[in-house]
Amino acid sequence: MRYGFIGCGNMGSAIARAVCRGAGAENVTLANRTPAKAEALAKELGCAAADNNTVAADCDVIFLGVKPQMMAGMLAGIAPVLAKRGGKFLLVSMAAGLSMARVREMAGGEYPIIRIMPNTPAALGAGMIQYCSDGVDDGRMFAFLGAMAPAGRLDAIPENLMDAAS
Image 1 (tube, rainbow, N blue to C red):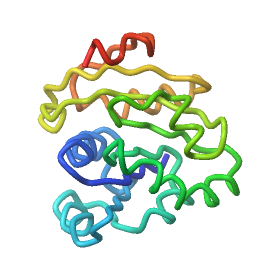
Image 2 (cartoon, rainbow, N blue to C red):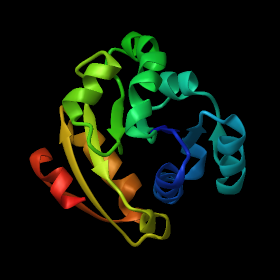
Image 3 (cartoon, rainbow, N blue to C red):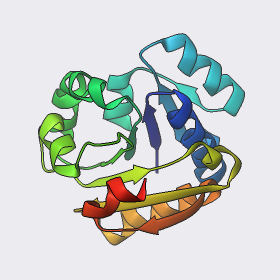
Image 4 (cartoon, rainbow, N blue to C red):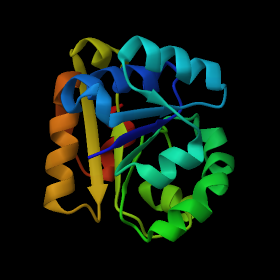
């Protein structure tokens, strides 16, 4: 499985560090609005750097690590790429306050999705991450949980409790 990150800020980089340990850095690609930021982190972690469209086209699990107010614009940019793939990927949103339904709407399809509320201790394996999902088959969920295991504890909760849990 290929894991991609769009957004390499504090939270995106914390989760990318964990996923590189859990899935292998050779299976991770990073993208960021400022390419130099993704390139520097990729060099540090031993993974690849690319642009948003490459992550959207090539990765099986696509972590959306942009700020909530930037999500619509970013997803509008990659929506045509996602549409061509027909749902053969998994979106993972870490944007506070955006429901899975809203992220799907902005992405332009009823794609399999996981919503996570991570914290920066995940970079060190000491995170407590709540998650919920919709439309995710057992194989993808197993792969996601395995890749995320080095982040710390993962706790499945209903989406209506996500804001309270964070």
